[in-house]
View (tube, rainbow, N blue to C red):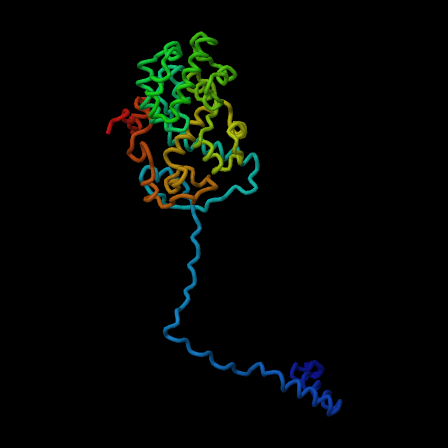
Length: 351
C-alpha cells in the first residue's frame, strides 16, 4: 500500500512540478507568462453589482404557456347536457394508413348513427316528383325555405303535366322566396316537360336518366335515388364537403371526386344513411363558422378538434335544431324525429 501511494502523485503535485519546469526554462518565458496572466481577469473576480432598476420601469411578464386542445373521450354526453369527466389529446392522423382511415371513418359513422338514429332527408315530399322538384329548388337556399314554399307550388301544380303547362310568371311568383326564382322556374318547368315527353310523366329511377333532366346533377340524382327509390347514393352538399375534409377523409374539393373518395371508404349499402348522418351533424353541431367541438360525439376521432368552442357548457349554446330546442327543417317530419324530441318547422309567414 505504501509503494502504491509513493508512485501516484496527486493532481496538486503534478501542477507544482510543471510550475518548477516553467520557471527553470528562463526568466523571459516566465515574464511572458506573467504578462499574459495579468491581462486575463481572474475567474474568481467578482462582477460589479448590476444597477438597481428604477421603480417606474415596467416589469416584463413571461407569456403563459399555450393550452393544448383536448378532446373528450366520449363527447356524446355533452350533447345530452352532461360534461365529460375525462379528456384525451386529439391526435391528427398524420401518416395514417389506409386501413386506419377506413376504420376511423366507419367508426365516426357508427357514432353519428347512435346520435341521429332518426336522420332523414329534410325536404318535405310525398312522391318522387315532389322530391326532385324540391331538391332542384334547394340550390343556394335552405331546405326550410324550400319546405315553406313548395306547399303552394304543389297545391297548384300537383303533377309533371300541370307544371309543364304552367305560366312561368305565375310559377316565378310562387318561387320568389327561394331566391334565383327565374332560373329555378325555368329548371322545374323544363324538367317537368322532359318527364312528360321522355318518361311518360314518371320520374326515372336510374342515375343516367335523372342527370339528363334540366337542373338535375349527380347530387340531386342521388338524393332522389336514395330517398325515393331506396338505391344507395352519396349526397355531396356543402355540409358533407366541409365535414369530410375536416375529418381528413379526403382533401379533394371537386364534388364528384369527393363522392368517389368517400364512397371507397364505406360499403355501398351505407351511402344513403351516411349522407344523412354527416349532413345532420354539419347542420346541428359541426357548423362552418362556430363548430361546437365541446358537444361533439366524434371529437376524439376528429383531427380538426379545437377549431370551435371546446368548453361543453358554451358549446351547448351553439347547438341547433332538436338538440338546441329549435325546430328542424321540415314542416311535416317523420314520426321518429318527433318521438326523439324534434320539432316541425313553421309554415311560411308564421311567427
